[in-house]
Image 1 (spheres, helix red, strand yellow):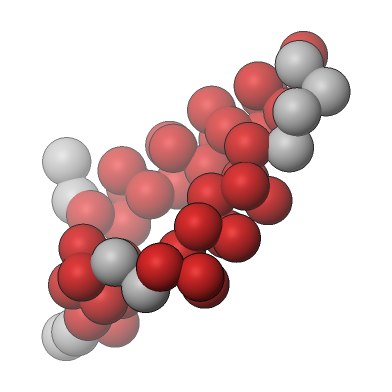
Image 2 (cartoon, helix red, strand yellow; image 1 turned 90 degrees about the horizontal axis):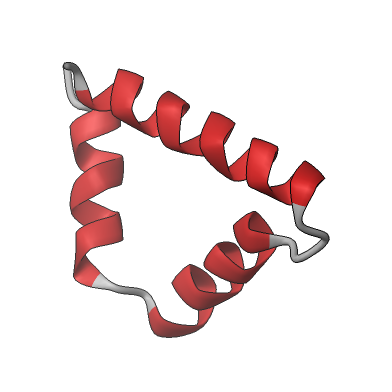
Length: 51
């Protein structure tokens, strides 16, 4: 499974959870990424945009 497919799958799962449970998980994840700047996120972005 390609990295882009995994990301899309995770986002779809998060969107489904957001509709079922009124806790905005994607917003919480975004707040975490913006505040902590984890190294795994930078690698993930580089893998997505690297050709």
